[in-house]
Image 1: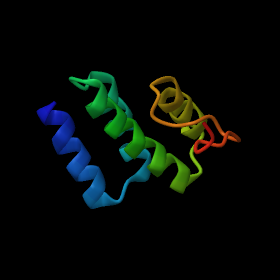
Image 2: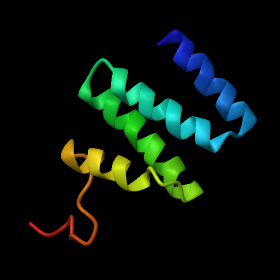
Image 3: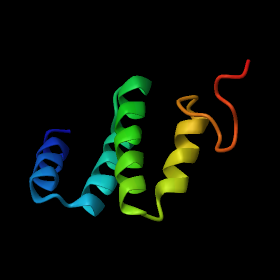
Image 4: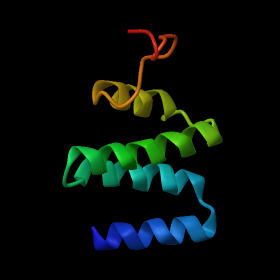
Length: 79
């Protein structure tokens, strides 16, 4: 994970959105627990949304599957 952390820092410094999406997704895949995975997936998803990246729907589905977001078009406040 140390190499991944260094790569993330470099991508942030370079403002490399495509690399950030890839690296945060990789970090989610190797995270030690569900909370860390959700954090990294959320970061990847936010960068994907900002960039209009084609991975945004896939990242969103992963967050929904993990119970960390609601499906698009649903009302998350409705019980």
